[in-house]
Amino acid sequence: MSSLRSTIKILIASTFILSSSNIYAISFVLPDNAKDSLVMEFSQGINKKTIASKNEDLLDIARRFDLGQNEIIRLNPDVDRWLPKAGAQIQLQSERLLPDAPRSGLVLNLPEFRLYYFPEPGSKEPSSVITHPISIGRQDWDTPLGQTSIIAKKENPTWTPPESIKKEHAAKGDPLPDVVPAGPNNPLGLYAMRLGIPGYLIHSTNKPYGVGMRVSHGCIRMYPEDIDTLFPLITVGTPVSIVNQAVKVAWAGDSLYIEVHPPLENHQTDNLLDIALDLIEQANNGVLPILDGSALNDALTERKGLPIKIFEQASIQTTETSN
Image (cartoon, rainbow, N blue to C red; front, side):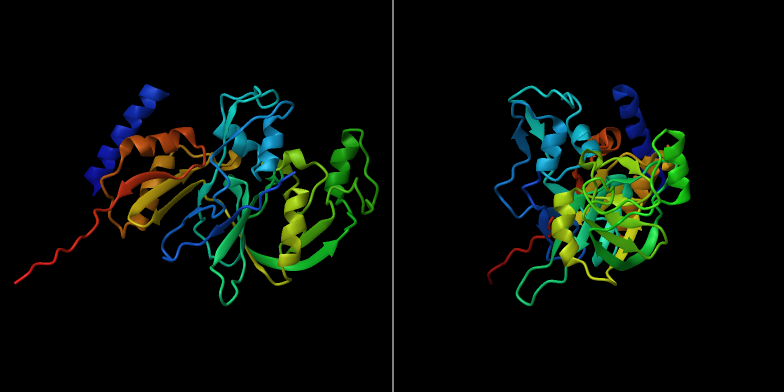
């Protein structure tokens, strides 16, 4: 086992040296097999690419397809963020690996800048997941990890900024009042859901083009149109899992996939390959299989957040014989 791991690491290292308004609700039907975690949009009208229109920047396209800013930029590294050429093909994302977390309530994967909601299915409905991009706390205002729940909900919330934020704004010459009234200038937007972790909310925003980035004081921000549809679905008591999974590994049938995102700045690591190999072993019952090293390297190098197939099990076939 150790020799196989060493060989894979050498091959990958060698390749590194050589290469050094949203109108779509993003919903996925959950796989029938509980161990499978690759989900795809069940709306067949959405393709993996779109065409940039005149006077439309990448952030407009991201919002239209319910993607975050960092996400669409990573998917389109050669496209100008502010002035994409009219007619340019823009890569989108229509497949995801689910985070390794309970498929219940809300799951927030911080390196992915994404929220997953697992609604309770009706008696004749398939299990599904709804996912939206989010903003999280910037490096000096980390969003906390852990298990919590929604303890309160509020429409048209007022905002009482804490002293730390008031001091920060005052130092910039932008003093805040003791209470910011509800309305278009309120940073919380029209909806807020309070977490059991004191001081933290999931809320709307009056700065939607920061969604998908580390820009908040630790709270979770959503596009106004996303929380507008999510808010009525969430009840007080809904469980919330906040995780840090820059690397995800999971099955889809007989195929093993990996999805890699850039680690958060304060969680930078030089051993993403080790993390990936550990997760691959865990997913494959403690056995490290013979992997597609080129595909694994692409995932670890590009870190685009796209699911990439790295291994496929041989199908077991039976043949009938006649006497």
